[in-house]
Every structure is written in C-alpha cells, then in structure tokens.
Image (cartoon, rainbow, N blue to C red; front, side):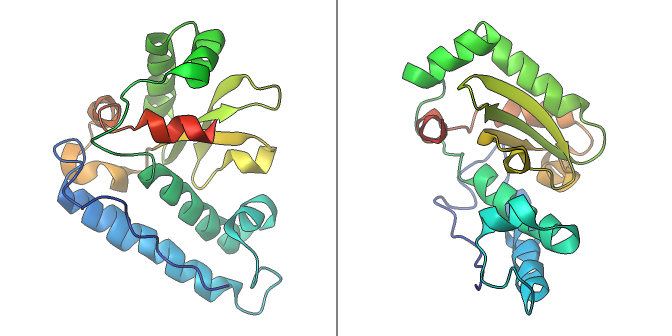
Length: 191
C-alpha cells in the first residue's frame, strides 16, 4: 500500500492566528510528510506492505510503528480543526463529557493539564472507553490509544514542532489557542 499525505480540508492560513501558516507549512508539509515518506520506505518487503494504518498502529513495532502512528496521529489531529463549526460539544458528545468530567469546562481543564504536563514530546488524547465513558490519556512519542483497544476522539499534539514557531516554549499558550480551532461537529462524529 502506498500511503499519501492527505490534503488538508482548509488553507494553510485558515487557522491563524492560533496556528500560523508557517507552522502548518513545517508541521504538515514537512514533518507529517516525512512520516508518510518514511513509512512508505519502511514497509516495503515486510508483512505491513499492504496493511492499512490502523493495522500498523495496532501491530507494528519499531520504526514502522513510530512512523505509521505519527501519520495516523497527525492526520487525526489536523482533521479535527476548522475555524467554522461548533466550538463546544452538543448532544451525545456533550452528555458523555458532562457524565465523565462534570462539565465541559472541567473537561477542558483536565485535558489542558494533561497536554501541558506531558513530559517531553507526545500527545494528549480524549478517548472513548469500551464501556462508552470518556477518558484522558497522555501518550509519549508516537503513542496511540488504538494500541489499548480504545477509540480516539480528540488529540492535542505537544511535540514542539506543533507550536514552537508560533509560541516558542509557551506550550500552555498553544494549548489555550488549540480550543479556538476545534470543530466539535467533526469531533462528535468520532464518538
């Protein structure tokens, strides 16, 4: 299978000022693309040569896993954004957040804290557990909740390349801005 860099559903300037065009040029156009290119090279001649990304995330190890998971994670991350769309959850998604965290504001606080306190590089995830409840996970490096049989709903990339050009070392400021570009219409469909 030949993996492709998915085309973003918005222009590179669409998320400014929260995520700048230059950041997207590097984060999407260089980092995400490099993971795609690396994965294509690594799977040749392996049992994953014809696998889809989810199979790679669930089963692979080493470089194939790291690059495959980063392709999956970045695609999931970028495709949860839009300047349009619902800025807070509604319906079943809102009910699940309220049941699991008490309120949307309490969820935002807990999720933001998970993203801010993850040591080093990685991802903060909102996941649907097997019983339908929601949880928050911190995953280092290319970590992905699919490996644990959980359903990813939302993620925040806290590798420095996700925010350094716009925020330098101010990860907390990036996380505050992150909430302004989420599209809960898209995210709710993942639940």
